[in-house]
Image (tube, rainbow, N blue to C red; front, side):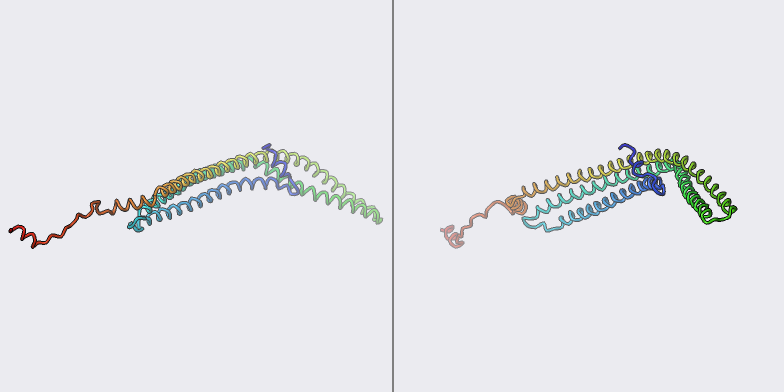
Length: 283
């Protein structure tokens, strides 16, 4: 930036309020910082609540029926859900760290604003002085015009010389006062423009640093969320692969291995008559 944007677009104007606009804009910078911290904190609260809900859901998967061929699938769900809960909890931790950085920056802002307020106090006095002289000049101009008109009216209406002379004295005083404030205005205007030019640049420097810092914070916020979303994507990808590897055949085989009662088939049994055996033995 050129450093002249504030100077160019915040000229004195009718009421010379450019300084007031710039000063309050600087103060609002701290409000923006505080609000950004509040926003990130609310996001962290949402993520923390979501993580707790996912943890609760993962535990509930352990309570589902472990009987039947579908039972092993709940282990896949539980593992995946626990990892998702961890991802969101990690996001909470990183957002809380970022909040501390924003708060630290906010404290630095307060100190910088206090220092700037002291540095621009001379400009504020110059602005107030210029505003006061501008108002006085306007009144002196109006009084001068009024007295001149009054003097001319008396001449045209044929007033006495005494009345005309008296009006002339008032007109002369008004003229002198008007000239005096014109001179004061020129001096105050020069001082006002010089100080406003310097102060506007100072305010713009502060705003450029502020906006740059806020962008860095937002980029860190965005990067953190992006990083966690990549981890979440990996968990989902792992879930998809695990489910792909969990085939119908593997579920049935696992059930058979877990619940099997043996691999040997029952032996053959032949009917033998007991009476026939006795006859054979005693022949």
